[in-house]
Image 1 (cartoon, helix red, strand yellow):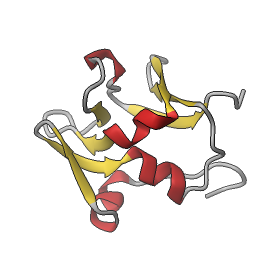
Image 2 (image 1 turned 45 degrees about the horizontal axis):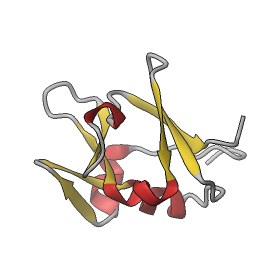
Image 3 (image 1 turned 90 degrees about the vertical axis):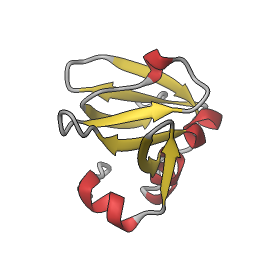
Image 4 (image 1 turned 60 degrees about the vertical axis):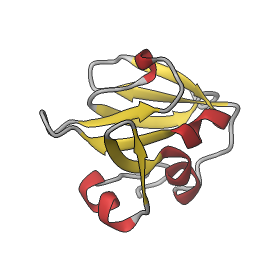
Length: 101
């Protein structure tokens, strides 16, 4: 971490954290990451891709999501169980509380 920013090397996280599965994808639970990094609890969180695409995910839905590495491209991505497919992010760059502007 540096100041109020934490950095995650997903390859290392896949070895450090207990893994969850969503569909055929295996990765680290997003709620576990939020708690591990001590992010401020908020009603929702913003996940943003490198191209600027972002989605807002309710706090109670974080536990349904994982961050993983896409085998076809090597990109860091998210996938959620029981949420619309458009909540998934390719090339994830950041995760922050929605009220942190």
